Image (cartoon, rainbow, N blue to C red):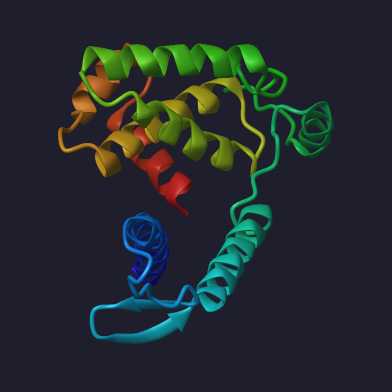
Length: 197
């Protein structure tokens, strides 16, 4: 809210300067306010330079967070794929998909298309898909997965995005139907917990 107040003050100052120029043209004797001060109902005047420094500092912090805390590895890059291949546990005999090489662009594209179809079918906001894929990308950048886990993670992140960002809901039973019985409630609940960790 402090950021919003500063932006509001800056807008207020800029608009008052425009008004001043218009009034000055109409009446040269008109007293215009100091162009170096910002005021906001009852608050002390603030120097424009202070507001600009504050905004500059905030943007610097956001850029730093974006490159550190919020950074996600490109799990589709060849280097990451090779690294994950080397550190992947040997496939177990009970999981036929474990030997599948890492996730690729084609899989991600199919999941993206599928997500849009689901969102359109249930009449949710299409922005949900980008939120879901952001969750998915962040999750996949931290661990190697096979095709089955990739599909489960994609379904779960879509479910999470809908649950957290839509007023309407998607029933877990509908999600299981969409998987054609491939996943059960326990699978989705366990993956939801893993994604949220």
